[in-house]
Length: 179
Image (tube, rainbow, N blue to C red; front, side, top):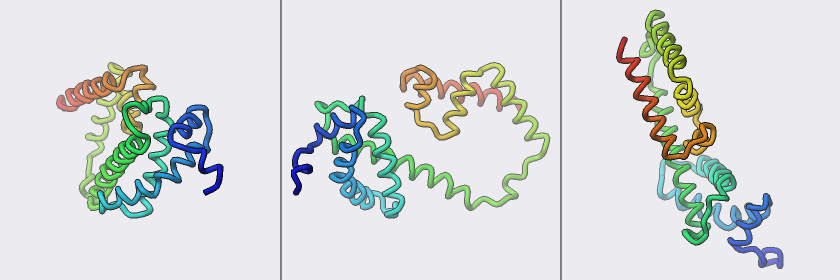
C-alpha cells in the first residue's frame, strides 16, 4: 500500500468531493465499486455485468450530485452508496421492464385513427393552456427526470413535487375521460 492510499479514508474522501475534488470519488469508487456490483448482481440476477457497471456509474454520479445531502452521522458512506445503487437498480429494472414489454407489441396494436390522434393532440393543447406548470412538470417526468430534478426545476420540495405530479396526472386524466 502506498503512502498516498494510506492517507485516504471515507471522511477525507467526502470532504474532498464536497470541495469539488475527484480524488475522493476515485478512492470511494475503488473501495466500494466492485463490492456494490457483485452484491447487486447476486441480488438482482436479471442484471448482467455490463448493466451493473453502467448502473455503478449512475450511482456515483448521483452520489456526487447529492454529496451535500450526505449526513455522516446517519449512515456510513458504503450504506449511503448502497442505497443509491439499489435505487439506480430499481430504476433500471423498471425501465428495462417497460421497454421489454414494448418489444413484443406489433404495429397493429398502435392502429390509431387520425381522428383519435387529433383528439389527443387537442386534449394536450387544452391541458397545456389551462395548466402550463402541470404540463411542464409532466413533460420533465416523461423525459426521464428524477423527482429531485423536477423539484429543483419547479422550486418545490420533493414531497410537494410528488403530490403536484399526482394532481397533474388527475387533471389530465379528467380531460381524457371527456372523450
